[in-house]
Length: 403
Image: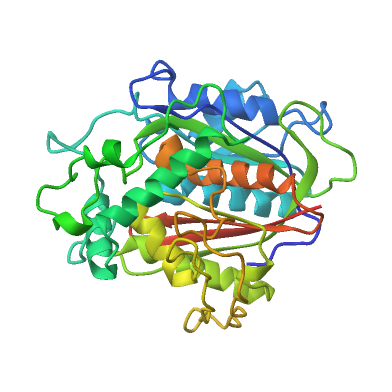
């Protein structure tokens, strides 16, 4: 979908991202979300509350966290809220819904995501606890997410060493990133010896391509949100305000193979680029949610954004989603050479979820916050792409442009 020209993100904020049962374990999902929404809910004109709060969440406790956060943030009884469950894409899809709501109502709207695995209730069926809810109907292949990442790594020949190199990159960039907060407890220096100590998450995985504890993102607590405005003519105020608002250009939610959800973002990216006529070469910032190194690398490989360390990317023909009526996105021109880790330097330049952690329903919104912060250092008109894989075989993508 292409959104109206006058729709802007004017403020963005997130909590620290901390491992489950660590620094934020005493905070429930509603409290985490309210702390972020409260920082966004009073700008750019302090007397105006947003028209609504839209939050993504995966594991509960339920009870409509969008509304809970709006009330907890002190926005007042008239401000409604609702909750989106698109698994790991929940936060990113909530940002898109908030932008759409702002466009429809002519008023600002807060969108983001929250996850508190530390306080999430235990789920069970017939008294038997389960960790992952069914993502597809009976009769469809419904692998666990780590099993799906293992299968993708094996199918695409993404070896353990390459996955570890990508994880080391995420940590190295996050350690020195301007997007890092003091309370973030994930980023650290990882060398080959440290990475070699990790064992396969699944004992039955092929050793040469197995996902390990280092190449799967940590389960984490956290929240993130942005404020979408149909008018940015008056500057935002407060610590969360962006000095330069970012226009919401377009977004897409697409479906793919539920057995290989890690590849689903490719179709979403191609749809957004095909609809807008931009190519990968037109992007200054790219944020890909790193649930697994194998998943992120498979997407980057397919888009021509990863390869041999120091090598030059080759042009990749972007195919429009079959039957969608979208024009194929232009093939990328030769861009920056791949960095020392074999990744386009525009991708997750401040580190990603492999370093920070993966608060499932919030991770897409965290990526948006990082993208708009990175855009602050780019020339006017520079664009950012944010994308995320979703359990059940879906992909979400969002295109932004800094003013």
